[in-house]
Image 1 (cartoon, rainbow, N blue to C red):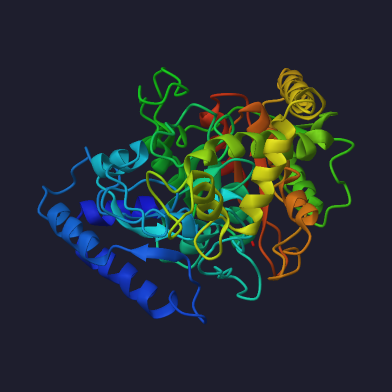
Image 2: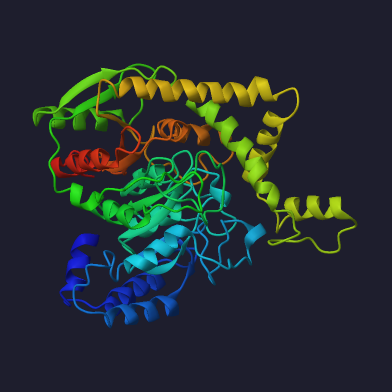
Length: 477
């Protein structure tokens, strides 16, 4: 039905919040757990969700002050939730229960949403397939032999499987948009600083951003409206008035200037034909298509995989076995405590997290900082300048979300570089701090996605363009 229609039915008392939550819980219990299940969820808060639904059912009919009244929502397991485990897909936080809620969780509470549970993810959001989780291996609901993408694979799978209409993920280099494309749902990475990161367990602080996954563009707009209020606790959160994104979807945009990246953007990609079909459909409806150049986009992957691991090596230093998280048994001294708590198996960091900590520590080390980290930051500035120049000529930029459709389990787990290239089209928006959305695309047997990127803080334009793609059917899977 979509989140908006469900919200209307709840307001009209055609369905109760409890009925909706019970249905979601029944679906999850029937098809999610176990080796044959989707395994999207790490933790399901059944009793808490039902109690919340009952409380919402006692509220007056059609309470417009609660835009997400009664809607079940899933949360990626790197968002802190008071009294509910937050593991970040890692054994090192296996028993961690936060004493507070993340800002976005507080926002969902005020909006009337019902948190169903926490979803699986690549450990500390480091991965593109959710195979790096220390726990379950989440399956793609469209083809269980294939990965759901990552690192927000559990949230994308929860929406694609019909457990929830809405979910939250985090996006550092494509971790909302890539799994959205792989699972055939909508995924939005907002402008850096639009949504507070307070209560998000940090991976790379200059790149991380929380955003919605939804079954349609309207649902993504509804969720963005709910989580976007300014929060002074996050120094990077931009203090400005936010428009009502859902309302803006009712306004038809004037003729858009749509940019297609010309050379250097993996033109041989199997997903490139979806961009051509969408561009032709838009042009036939009066929108203008222009070729643009993003000459430094090809350097995005090496720049990203120096900057992000460098920030991760600093952020993850707090997991030392002293204050919270896994602590090794009977350490000989403080150094032994640190090394074994962080490195031993099971209990410490997994292989991919160790790999990125080592990469980042090396890039920041004396004698290598200028050659690696500083050079990567200079490339980041060039990529940002490329986008700024392009947006003088076009309103939005259209690319594939991923180079290929979802791959099979194990195909890339032994080849980190091949896995990293899954982020080819998505890292640019993170490096430049821009908003970008993935909308389902393609007509083949496997889901793919179209990515639309817009200028900073132009989420209204971005959502309107995504709605156009959705309406014209260019993305019908």
